[in-house]
Structure formats: structure tokens, C-alpha cells
Image (cartoon, rainbow, N blue to C red):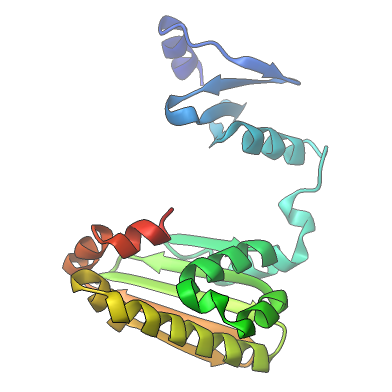
Length: 203
């Protein structure tokens, strides 16, 4: 912390006070704050302030959300991982489904999405595994059918890397969980990153 603060002082970068903390501006609108001499928190300003509020007990922290913390152990060993609450899961699935999200079945299903988790690792290519937790096995099976329909819609207009990516994706359901798996090698993944499909999904 001392080293970084000295460099910021030389560059005349000043921070703003937030209770006992000082929040510093970074490139691209990102804010940064030191939690202790060896720990920094980065993010958009409101997110940083909410993180500090949760840390200090001003608002409920993640630890108070049992549904989220229960999902974390099964994915936290992944190179890249995340867990999402019901609203985040609904947004994720709407983006994933594309045109299929306009089907009447999705309006019924989306209210029964309780959360999701995914992992991504880069050993021997790229592996992506997404689990969407639903309220019951019927919902998971219906969602699986909708995702498969969404893949079919995308395949109709897909070319090159996009088509390869869609062909590398499998979808199934197990009890109340939708399971989506994607696997490809490094070269195909690099081609996918340049495609319109990747751009749309990563927004």
C-alpha cells in the first residue's frame, strides 16, 4: 500500500473519503480502495461502496445469503467461476436463449429459476460448465428444451467459428438442474472470440 500510495502521490492522484476509507479513481471509471495494507477492492464506485458497507456490517453481506453460499463450494476450485442469484440467472438465460426467450414457455420457466453456477478452465482447450438450478425436474426439462431450441435458432444463421462453438455445446437436465457443457480447443476458441456471437454474449 505504501508503495502504491507514493506512486499515486507523484502522479497527483487524489482520493475521496468514504467513512474511514479513501477511494481512488483508476482508468476506465474503475475505483479502488485499500481494505488493509495488502488487500485492494476494485469496481464501479457504487459497487465498491456497497462492498465496504457489507464488510462493515452496514448492509447484509454475501454470508447472509444461504442460497448463494451453498452453491459456491461446488465451483470455487475452478480457474474462473461464478454464482448468480435468481435475477442474475434470468438475465443470463435470456441472453443465452436469444429468440427462444420470446416463447411463452420461458415466461413460465423463468420464475422457477433459483440460481446458477458456472466454471471455466483452460486445461487442454477451453471447458465451460453451467448448472442452472430450478425448482423442480419438470422446469429443468422444459428449460433444457428451450435452450436446445435457442441453439437451433442460432445455428440457422451461424457461420465459421460460431457454428463450431454451437456444435461443441451440449445441453441436458438432471433432476432439477439444467446442465450446459461447452468444450473446444484453443484455436477454435480464438476464432470464436472474434465472432459476432461472442461479442453479443459478452456485452
